[in-house]
Image 1 (cartoon, helix red, strand yellow):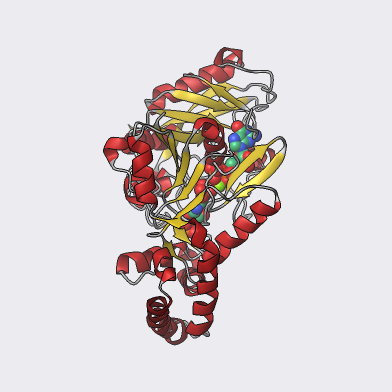
Image 2 (tube, rainbow, N blue to C red):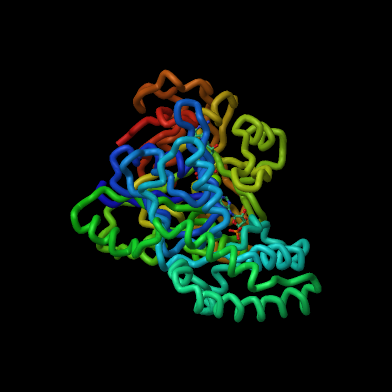
Amino acid sequence: MPTKVIIGAQWGDEGKGKIVDILASNADAVVRYSGGNNAGHTLVINGEKYALHLIPSGILRPGTICVVGNGVVIDPEFIVKEIDSLIARGVSMDNLLISDRSHLIFPYHKLLDELQENFRGKNDIGTTKKGIGPAYMDKTERCGIRMCDLSNPDTFAEKVKANVEFKNLLIEKVYGVNGFVAEEIIEKYLAYGERLKPHIADTTKILYEMAKQGKNILFEGAQSSLLDLDYGTYPYVTSSHPAAGGVCIGSGIGPTMIDECFGVVKAYTTRVGKGPFPSELNDEIGDRIRERGQEYGTTTGRPRRCGWFDAVLVKFSVRVNALTGIVVNRADTLGSFDKVKLCVAYEKDGQITTAFPASLEDLAKMKPVYEEFDGWDENLSGCEKFDDLPESLQRYLRRIEESCETKVVMVGIGPGREDIIMVN
Ligand code: GDP
Ligand code: IMO
Ligand code: MG
């Protein structure tokens, strides 16, 4: 290691949680730095499935400190439930730390997320409706309320009252639905504050000290580079900075303290929510990938849109995150197809390009240029190293490296902790 960033390099759900859990076997700390419970990270350990949303994916490694950083927006009701459900499964929360600078999600954020989406009608973003966007809006508008505010009940109450007064105007006068009673929120939230108190800390200081001592720290991305406010397919993005640059702002660790950055991808592409998707397969092959991969959202249960691997998009992620390597998950899921396609470039008006455009209107016009590969067997369970993989899969992965201008560092061959091949 010692400090390694793991981010999604497509449109989310690449299997980041699985990779973080694997690498956490020798991590001293695992840190979430952006997003909120819009994330759903699945770990499969000894056949048992864990779906984590706010709690870092190092929590199943006893002794690893798990930090929910300042860049994360936290729904306290949700995190308390997540903590309780993990405790009920015998998972210790002794090592969970929550940043005192993290912003809180309130019930009015969740309602506004829904009302705004309904108002957008056919132009909706397809958010998870967890209140993420409205909470980050309050943060940048400078009326957000933070974890540290919970320890000061009087000023916390004042802040909530001021926000509820304004949000109720918006909710009632603009959207015409019932608003909230500030006192009810205050009472509930102060109780959550008491419950979370043992975990709340200045996590920036703890992480800085650990990094200075050369401890192994993993930063766990949520969402993905293509859902980033700056690098994603705006406006069909989330409201935070899941890209590698978000690590510094969202955790308090400066750029000189970061050593490596891996991007996680699937052997194909998926997207949940709206927005252009050049290599999308609206046909039986797309349906077959969805069914084989059980591609339904961990957080919302929505079917994920499926398509071939898009190397133009991943090459863009490699560049804007300065990735030191990529992890290719789900090589097994793409197995059993006779032929597999890889999008190596886009074509528009007879011009070939490998540049990923900023304009969504341009992106929507891009036609994928495919190369075709022979398929491979879906059962890869006997493979322990790269050379054990079927030759056609090796060729596919080598071409991905070439077209994305990076190297493959790990290959996922199943959902379990052990289903991984270390390449470099
Ligand atoms: P995350 O949000 O990036 O952590 O990913 P999700 O957990 O939302 O979605 C990834 C899904 O793929 C989960 O159901 C994982 O268990 C599963 N998964 C991850 N890697 C592999 C793999 O290599 N093969 C298979 N078959 N499933 C995988
Ligand atoms: P993980 O960490 C996939 C998508 C939503 C929507 C857009 C905005 O599991 O990979 P938001 O609720 O954030 O305002 O929604 O972002 N989205 C995700 N898609 N995986 C995720 O997280 C996502 N988190 C948000 O579907 O298109
Ligand atoms: Mg997910």
